[in-house]
Image (cartoon, rainbow, N blue to C red; front, side, top):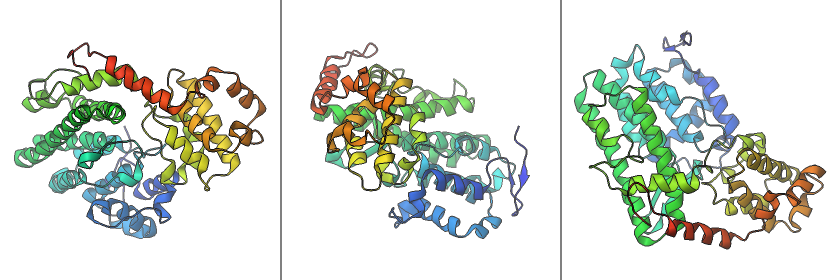
Amino acid sequence: MAKKQLHQSGLKLTGIAPNILLTHVANTAPFLFEGELDTTGSQREYLAKLIYYKKNLNALKNIRLAEYFHLCMSAHWATAGTFVPTDVDNQIREGLWKHPEIKKNIEKMADITIDSWTWDYEQVTNRKSYNEGKGQVMSTHEGTWLSVAIGAYNALMKNKLEKKAGEVAEVILAEADKEEKLLLELREKRDHINFLRSTALMAHNFGDLDRVIDQWGMSEDDPFRKRIYKLGHRLNENAHPILVYSGQVNKEFLSVENHRHMSMRQAKCLRRSRQFLIPVGPFMDKWGRDLGESKLLSLDEKGEIVCAFLEGHKRQDQALGYIRAYHGMMSVLPRGIDSLEQNIPYDVVAEIRNSRFGELARIPEEEMLLFYKKKLEEFICPVTNLRF
């Protein structure tokens, strides 16, 4: 068990010290502190908060529990789409909700949680899906939010604050309804690719929710648990079968693609700009083109990224995302791989040219997209019998 440390304000912390947390944010998302992002407006206040505290570390001396929770939330929202998210998940999902000072802070923390549902994360993640007709966007941030919200709900119920718990529950249900509607509308519009992206995001989001429901040990007889548990896995009378269908689509086509991208952590140049944040796999051609065209990356750094693509593919050799990113990058370099042969070890260049990786990378993007559209059209869900 982590040893409690007494903060200068008198706050007992078992988690990361606030100043160290800000150092971690700066390490994985330096662009946050270099003026690249728009931090104006109430929905981006969490970004402005991080910048303020980074410039005014002395202000952290007086931090209290609710503000520390807000800082942890802000740090995680700002980095959840990066290659190395801040490690405060368990603090914001459970640890801080069981803090000795929780009774004095719980309602304020619950209000912060409710407010965070509307925080604008557009600039800090590329793992997004769009329903452009209705201006809707979904990302993995919704999963982070659900995991915190269900922690808030459980803490409020344990502290007999049923009214406030009900307010949190309403927003959890609103998020589930939002994701359900987005999937239904994309299916109706025949937007195959955004639908596929959305299945990966939905599976992640409800997976986060399920894990924290289990973490808090919610009773199987709890009516709210019955309403929201395993929405992407089991048919539920309160939800449309599209959620289970989407979970099965993700399992069939995308689950191997959207992992923790450990190999990309070695290319620290990717942390330089929000433009370099990784998208939903396998649809990474545009990301590769952006990397190839970027003036912020040297040829040596682009070579480093190509090496990371190959290593990542070796770790997940059934996934196609890194191959598609490589294809995109090569399509915009003047001489393709020859443009980087002085910046990549000879054996790596030879392996790319003579391997399955290189062979698959020659497939045009249009052909790859048609492949996924056709496979989606043909797929019949074994649980719901739904088709796209």
